[in-house]
Amino acid sequence: MKLVVAIDGPAGAGKSTVAKRVARELGLTYIDTGAMYRAVAWKVLQSHGDVTEEATKEAAKDIDIRLSYEGEKMKVFVDGTEVTEAIRTPEVSRNVSAVASFGFVREKLVELQRRMADCGSVLMDGRDIGTHVLPKADVKIYLTASVRERAQRRAKELREKGHDVELAEVEQEIAARDKADMEREISPLRQAEDAILVDTTGLSIDEVVAKLMALCKGAA
Ligand code: DC
Image 1 (cartoon, helix red, strand yellow):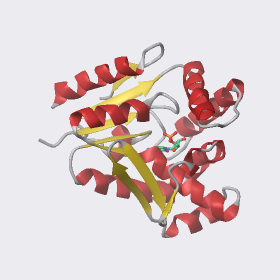
Image 2: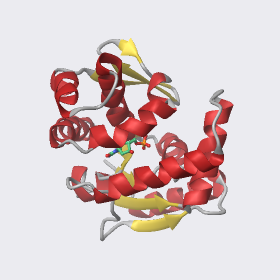
Image 3: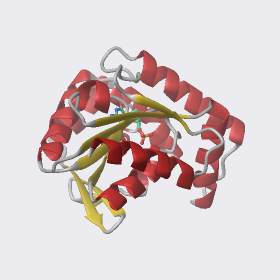
C-alpha cells in the first residue's frame, strides 16, 4: 500500500533528523525539499555572489537538481557537482528564504517534488508540503519547537561541522527565517488544517521518532 507522509515546520524543528529515521523504519523514500531550495540558492551565490531576481532566474532556468541515496545518506547534486555539504553553510542559510520566495523557483521545485512523490511511498519534509505540494497526503505533521531550542540545536549542529557560531546570532537568523517563510506571499509556512501539531520542545529525538511512527502506523 502506498503511504504519503508530509512533515512541515519552521527551521531547526528537527524535521530532517526525525524524518530520515521514520522514513527508514517505515521503508519510505525521504525527500528533503529544503535541500532543493538550498541547491538553487547555492547556485545563485556561486554564479552571482548575491541574490537578485535576475540572477535567480538565470540560475533556476535549467538547473539540474538530483537527490541520491546511499542507505541513510542523502547526497545532493547541482548540474553534476556534489553540494551536499556546501548547501548547509550559514551563507546559504541566510540567503535561501529570499530565493524560495520567488514564484518561478517554487513552481519549478513543486513540479519536481510532485513527480518524485508519484514514484511510490514517500516522506517529504518542508514548509508547504501538507498545504500545497501534497494536499492529499495520508499523514500531515506540523513539527515545531521554541525559537530558543531550535537555535540551540542548529548551533550545536553547525559547531560539530566546524563552523564558529554564536547562539544569539543563530537565534536571530532562525527568527528572521521564520518571519520570511511565514510572511511570504506564495505558499507561506503554516499548519494545514488537517495536520497534527507536534511540539518537540524538551523532547529527545527518540521520543519524537516514536510519536511520528505511531501517527504514521495509525494511518497505514
Ligand atoms: O528546511 P531547510 O532549513 O533546509 O529549508 C531551507 C529554506 O527553504 C527555508 O528557509 C524555506 C525554504 N523552503 C521552502 O520555502 N519550502 C519548502 N518546502 C522547503 C524549504
